Amino acid sequence: MAMSPFASEEDDGLMNEINMTPLVDVMLVLLIVFMVTIPVIRHAVKIDLPHASSQKEDAKPAQINISIEADGTVLWDGTQVDDAALNQKIAAAAQTTPQPELHLNADRKVQYERVAQVMSAAQSGGLTKLGFVTDPAHH
Image (cartoon, rainbow, N blue to C red; front, top):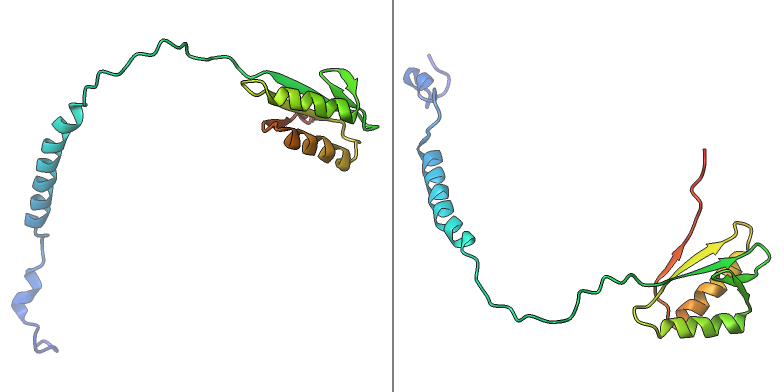
């Protein structure tokens, strides 16, 4: 005797296996879609592109090393410069093409304000590529 009015003795054996028909239908549709799209993908559009005579430019931009010593002295590629000369050199370097990269070496004891002044001078002079050079920590 079943407790539910809808349950009967024959219902126990109905859901023994999964109906595979919808799955097979989906797989056949996907197979047809791939069979149609793969030949289309292989046939790339052939375009006769114009040829330019210019050489590929592999020239890496120049590097300028600016060092700030612990007392605030600024060195441009190893030669000491004051703030006015630094601004002139930055302005001249900003006009060159490709624009040089500025590598900033700051002593660990230098005041942050001095580093910020040099960075500000580089930005106002037009140099956009600036990198900090650090020594990796030795453990």
